[in-house]
Length: 399
Ligand SMILES: [Fe+2]
Image 1 (cartoon, helix red, strand yellow):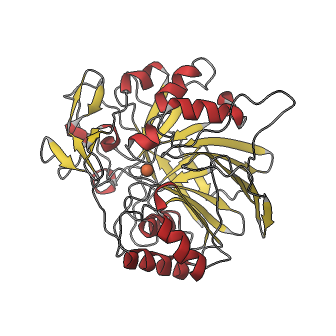
Image 2 (cartoon, protein in one colour; image 1 turned 30 degrees about the vertical axis):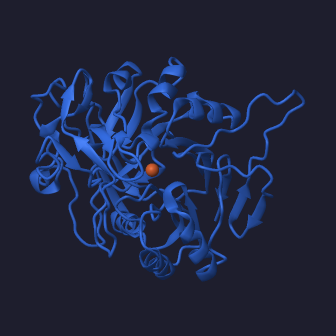
């Protein structure tokens, strides 16, 4: 299927609170080089904007077929749990490589750190061309720096960053990682986000305890020479990967709101109200609906999409449906990520498993916020599809 990936950067004025709201939607700008369509047709728009920075970033316009990859290797850099003695194994079209201890001939001084956060690194290959992307950054820089170092992730080889949504357990390690590797990262390293909402300060409002849930230091991003790139709509990134754009709600799945966003920008942090939707900026503090959440996908040759859902606040099935519609690929090879089912009743989890069975991916790899009941129900319902992965696990998918 030929797809027109067309970029149309929107230059903001210099990032102050009075900056005009970017015009992101195809009905507003559709007579320019955007491709607009409904249903399974593809709308591919990269809208690039340096947020809070001094220069707009232009995303490269790409026209052609959806990239077909020869290999997609997903490394779990941070998750809640590590199982050092899990045996690695080979499955059809999948090599599951657990990290073990990471021992050498020197006395061990460090080990992988697990925490309630998520970070993944993806190395994709097409012919002799390789791309490296970091998707999410865990809760703390200490865990991200420690694990990335132990796992041999070269900061200089990273081609792009993707932040799935604005929660501390996904962006917490970002700024510390950038600062620790200052001077080693590629200049103007793109950081893809799904919308301004990910920059709002957040409070955790759900049980067991309320409290600050962090905010991204935008000045630190600018100082690190990161090019924040907004992909509210589906976009191709570094010629290999895709982000879904904002995830629609087209299934039975319901968004729970465990956090609240504070609307406003002050001293280098926060979100510009003008850049938020009316629903998002309706009050000084609003319950989080995760309008800005995005998933990441890779098209493995002959197999279909490898979808990284990250945290699935908008629903894991919604994220998959969004990827299918966005990229015109029906076949799902793998769904991997946090499925955010822990807070839901068992019936809801069963409905999710049933919906995943209908989608029929080859592999389902739950992480992070998925919750224990899903593992039990999915193991009974689709034992050959369910694969366990832990902090440090590398999952190599090949056609
Ligand atoms: Fe999360």
